[in-house]
Amino acid sequence: MMKRFFALGLMWTLSTGMALGAAPEEEGPGLAAAVTPHTMRVFDERLQHGIDLIYSLQFEEADRIFKHIVETEPDNPVGYFFMAMVTWWRVLLDLDDESHDQAFFKLLERCIQVSEQRLQQDPRDFDAVMCRGGAIGFRGRLRGNRHQYLGAASDGLKGVEMLELIQQLDPTNKDILFGQGIYNYFAEVMPQKYPIVKPVMWFLPNGGREKGLQQLKEVVEEGFYTRAEAAYFLAQIYRIFEDDPNQALIYLEQLYQRYPANALFHRYLARALIEVGRWQEGVQHYQEIIRCSQAGQIGYHQRGQIEALYYLGQYAFHQNRLQDSEQAFAGIDSLSRGVDEQSVRGYLALARLYLGMVYDLQGRREAAVQVYEQVKKRSNYGQSHKLAEKYLKEPYQETP
Image 1: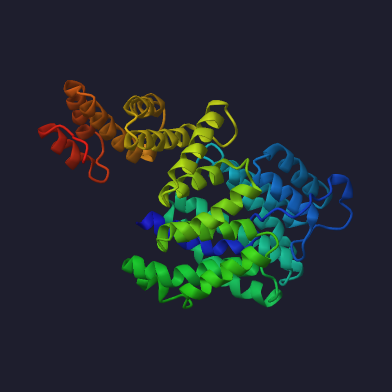
Image 2: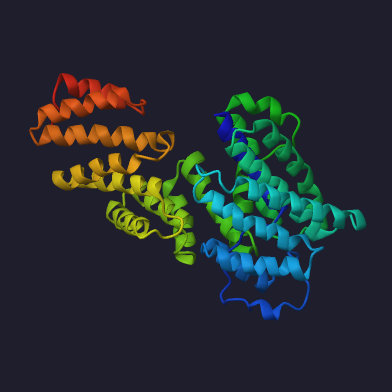
């Protein structure tokens, strides 16, 4: 619970720097067009083009664009911030892989240094305030993911302090509403969901759930650089906190339509389709996810393939295609070797349970018993141990 609190609580700091945004209607120009200084105060097609490349997981090309900004404008924190964002997405695609962490933290620190140098000359420098705040926010977010809770909390509090200053600098900027919306939403929802955090909120401004949702929706409709990030957070909010998967699906479909090469959006879309009962569409996406994983396409990894096989197996099971179901669930075991079991423990436990149920329906009782015993030896997930014990006493039978 504490991990979720810090990880989600820190989200409100992200808008103090420009998070990644939605694609414009047409591509921006390449490097040759870089004439005027890059800024996030107004819409800049050159920055947006680089952002689109990040969301499309074209990291090398995005790196080239933002490194060029750093080389030509070494005192501008914008280039440093977006160089860090390229690496952030390398981290985000597989949070179990910590090999990019140090590079990410190093890029953030450089962005903060350059921002603070600009702020010494002008404390109200818009880009410097935004980049410094954004860098601190993302640093705190990863610290929370890595269980560095004190550092994460410190970064989160710094982010809250900067929200008011950013609004003063440009009150009409819709991208600023991104952080305000996240803060307002979670400032009301988190204490309700987790009362243990109420004492923390005594030292912070009051929030508002409805106001936060409305602000995030405004960003999706009218923001420059944070439109996609706002849509992503709205999708997660509606899935996890509002228990409204249909509303979440609306934003995930928008994101996937705009960035079809983004493996993370693809996987969330498939899962959301399953959650709303659109199994056939969800299964089609999961089949594509498996193909992309097997082809080694960027962002598609073994954990995503395990998730896909689980839902394919479940779909086949309920259609009484037992051989297909067995193949999917058995395939999860071989894929799980070399993967951190904790990150896929739910899928592993339930896949083994389903496999035993398949064996029972096929009349292979000895094999079913062996699998149920294996389920009991694994980490308990949901009712996996209870159901395994039940089916050890009495074979699973299909409900009439």
